[in-house]
Length: 318
Image 1 (tube, rainbow, N blue to C red):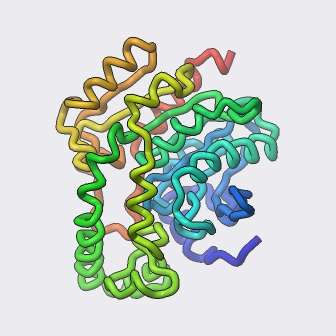
Image 2 (cartoon, rainbow, N blue to C red):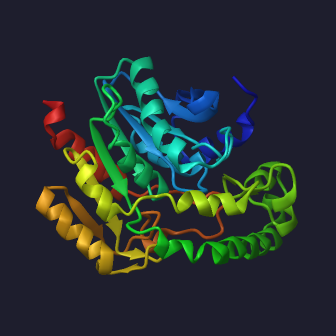
């Protein structure tokens, strides 16, 4: 087990959850080609387990409050390869393989009867893509909740360069406004405030290792169009969820374009697809977003209530 800055994780736990001593914030998983993926987990007496797959560039600390809401069950959130404290380079194909691989390790390690996958944005696309794996025994998940998976990645790729620059400028603003916070070592780890940082040994953008920004764009381009993938994903016990105020995906109050086509395809295949009004891409209510937080929490009452409600209502609990 590698030496991880536990002080940072513990600080986040104290601020976001009550069950501080019940979380293991330095749990290692085995990824593709021996890559170590670092995770935080909570163990309970439940036979249910929940694995949270983060969005692109989002550190797992952003999901600690969500973990707390799931804590009646065994729950784990891990940093995807090429993000935060996990090893390896950002790679869509291996990230997809690792969704199933880490789920299987978690399920076997805790002798779980049922496992639920909860993916956000890029993590949701990985979760859905992983369900297409036809290998016997490669599907550890009994239910899947995909929050805001992108339909056509080409729609957001054109904004990636602006996003890089936008984050750079936002980081400078935050550092000037709260120097006592953003001068910390962990802030330097997650939030570079100089474009020159992209050229040093371990440059990072949010939680994403940015040794090669061009590679990030190339790997994102490999995400299949969800309209093409939908017939091949695991459709039973799979939910797709979108936010009505999702500026990242260009959704304003109602689904349009390819997302409207997706909704019709889901209806025909019996896959639940719901849109939650007045929620952002993070599935926080738009009035709850704290833009000055060091780590913007993905917690909202919506996500845990929806996931747990459908878990308990499903035939898996009978």
